[in-house]
Length: 181
Image 1 (cartoon, rainbow, N blue to C red):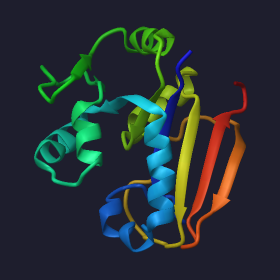
Image 2: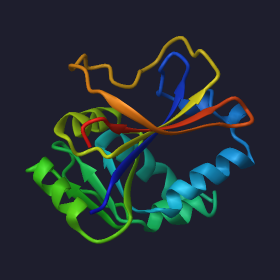
Image 3: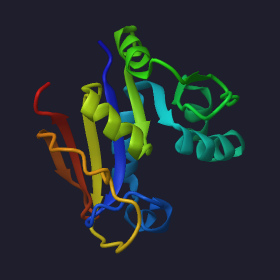
């Protein structure tokens, strides 16, 4: 069975919004290798509408190789009840029976189904029991404002730390699984 693995860059105060404004001073070869290893185990992406719209506007014309090739060619599953179509290469829109459709994706053969961004979707997946791993790269910076991960106020969801590493820049690379998995 495939796993859904969601990855986020976070600040110490839990901000995940606009990492392009605070993440890059901490990016180095070591972080690049960790991200590359995660992508190597991924053969599909799952995303919400906002993330899809942003990435579909950026990656098709990006020259940032080899990651642009990866995102442009990997199968993408977009969860949205408001989009009418998903035109970016290899994109499939999921707009009804979302939990059932995602469960079917997980039953297909293949590697991990990756997520990056899509905070609303990852929280929903977690509470629906569909999220298998949550990977957080916690940066040693207090951003002060911006959207935080898990803002909805839904009840507690115990998590189990299954892997941790401190990168040379002080970023914590943490992998959690829902404690009930």
